[in-house]
Amino acid sequence: MTRVLIVEDDALQSELVRRYLEREGHDVTVLADGAEALAEVRRSTPDLLVLDVMLPGADGLTVCRTLREEEFYLPILLLTARSTENDLLLGLELGADDYLAKPYSPRELVARVRALLRRARRTTPTSTVIAVGDLEIDPDRHQATLGELPLDLTRAEFDLLEEFALHPGIVLSRARLLDRLHGTDRWIGDRTIDTHVKNLRAKIETDPQRPARLVTVYGVGYTLHAG
Image (cartoon, rainbow, N blue to C red; front, side, top):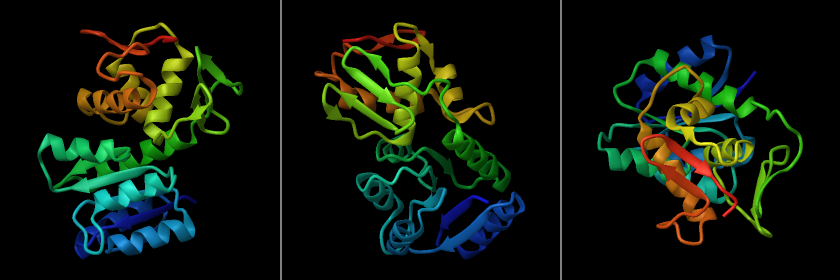
C-alpha cells in the first residue's frame, strides 16, 4: 500500500481528495500546515506528496524547495490556484514533478497520482552505469555525476537525463519526453519539458545560454551530446 500525504488547508477539498485516493487503495494522511508537512515527510517519508501552494506555516513552494534541498526525492504534485504560467513553472523549477491548477477534477488528480507513482516505480532496462562523455548516470543508485562532481537532480530531471543518455545523439521529441515522465494518462504543455531542460542545462553545461551538451533541434526536440 502506497502512502500519500495530502497537505491542503481547505478541509472539504482535502476530504474529497482523501476519499478518492483511499478508493484507489492508498494509505492517506491529511495535514493543513506547511511546517507540519515538512516534519511529517522527515518522520515518515511518504511515497507521494500532494501539496497545496497556499498554506499556513510554510507555503507549498517553500516546502517543495526545502525537501529538494534536503534530498527527499518523493514525487510532488502541486495544487495551485495561481493561474499564471510563471507561477506554475516556478513550482517545477523548485523541484515539483507535476501541478494541477484549481479547480480540478478529483479523477484527474487520481490519474496524475497514478502516473507519478508508476514513474517512480519504473526500472531502467539496464543495470549498468550509462556514460556520455564525462557525464555518468547510475540508475540503480539514482546518482549522476559530471566528471567527479555529483549532480543534484530532481526525480524528473534524473529521468529525463537518463532518457537522453540512453539515446545519445538521437533527437527526442517533447512528446516522447512527456511520455517518459508521465505515461499516456494525460497531456501537459511543452513548456514543462522546456523548464526541466533549462534546469538540467544549468547543472551540466559550462554556459547554459550556449549549450554544448543538451542541444535544441528547433521544431523537433532535444539531443544529448558528449560535450
